[in-house]
Length: 108
Image (cartoon, rainbow, N blue to C red; front, side):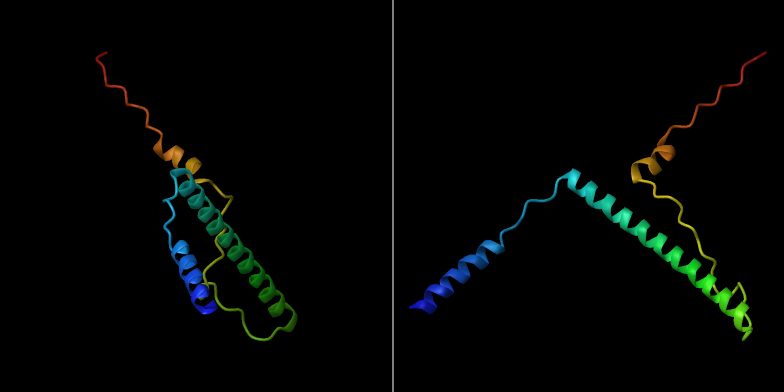
């Protein structure tokens, strides 16, 4: 008897868990997109910092040991600074601004 009641309770909970959630609102979608953009930028900054530290360690190694030759600059890409974070609404605002209309050439 216990097993049957336990099975019924488990099936009832499984049905409740499978209920669909309502779709996220536009505000929630915007927040999620902004969080994803911030995370992507933070990853770019971390990659840049790692690249710079690797270059510093390699330069110190070649300077102190004198072993080997440093790899030419063409072999490895340069570290690219991602710059400060710009939210999507600020980054799109200058591009979305209309250009001033040209004045028609008049007689005179």
